[in-house]
Length: 205
View 1 (cartoon, rainbow, N blue to C red):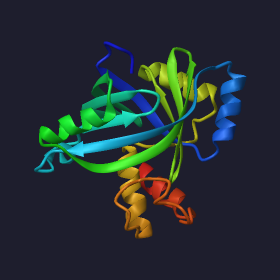
View 2: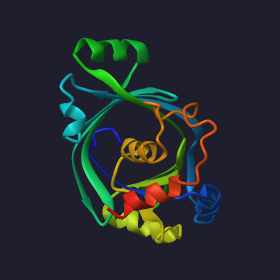
View 3: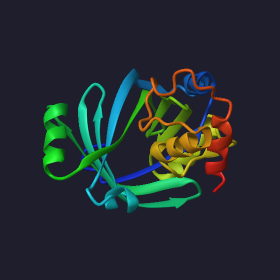
């Protein structure tokens, strides 16, 4: 999200074949903004559990920087999600975590992913690799998002209205996983044949 911009508008697409998406990006002369990087995300909740229950996101992320993000007031139209988002860069992950704990928040879930970032037609396109599958997110205004979807030949892909945490919880329930967190270690040795089915079912809701 750009500095000063307080509303995020994006679409999340289920794209198992990221190599094909990369080829489409190259063919469209998209700009590679950031090489593949590992992310560790901590999702927080209030003591009464109402933060997550009300659809709000309070997240601390570690990749090449440390970012604290709050999201709320989400709406969905044609698979495109719009919501308020405020994000700041902080200097120290551990100190920020301790501060949030002192304010009464606790870590509800940890999730990991690898992300590669591109730009095309004034939109940000990210290729995300999670323990349960691969996705492409396109952020911009709604018209630009649809233009990029068409340019990359992604019109037939499933649009995901839920968050990665929502998808993880659905996959976890389907496979009967005991792990609390969505980490690559937790999914080591887990066969992924049911991932696509669960993801498709969520997209069709």
